[in-house]
Length: 344
Image 1 (cartoon, helix red, strand yellow):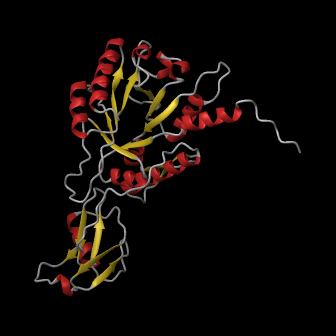
Image 2 (cartoon, one colour; image 1 turned 45 degrees about the vertical axis):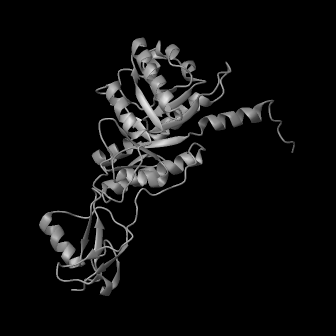
Image 3 (cartoon, helix red, strand yellow; image 1 turned 180 degrees about the vertical axis):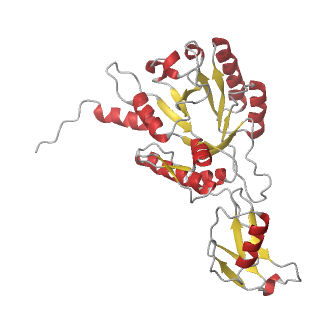
């Protein structure tokens, strides 16, 4: 059977579209411990200007601020700039330009930051038609991809045409993965008028946390996309959604080629659990500790990581159950560890 002929320029056009869809980063902006899991999976971590990663309480945790978003509910470009200069992120989303004057103000800020941080990716979100003519090509355009991204009273369809975004470098703001994938195809696929594809340089979405917190949901690549997991902790639900989304983007050739890396430094010394009596760690027996095993060895030390990231050590399962019941603290997440503990 004869092999179908490839249209002239078809192979190069397909390559161009493939390159346009492959992002440089996929961001997840949330505090520790959720940011720890995101960073380990290869997501770009970061914050909005009005909150922090809340990691100072952990001596061995160092999650980078790679992306800095603005507080669209209470915009203050001077405040945002101060936070940018403090963290020096790789990506800075300056603000939403609802007027031509705002667009010019944000461009001036971008020019100043460009001189001081030439490697940074700077993003301005056009929210009016006039902003497209003001924002230069070296600035990335922020495209509100979610159904309620940013200020919902200004959706891209209201103030722009698809042609305004084609041929530009874009950062997709919000939107569940299936919604963003539809949008990516619309912004990059060939058109009868020969519009250049948009270059999708990055995107962010924090809905995994919000849906896990409010509804107990986990995102899945196939319908139904949101499924309730009442038996899982908040951290486990968020982590599962992040894992599913990463696989979804990898399958479509969109995922950035970052290596997974840990933001948690393991201690050089063992962790000790004791009843407070004189204790010689050099003579303590080393136990394998099993989380979530009610029938486990009552003489083994137990490390438990809770939903807020706090890790507590107990001398035994019995000791752990007693204190959890007394204090009202219950385990939400944990992985097997090894701990030296004094025998009962």
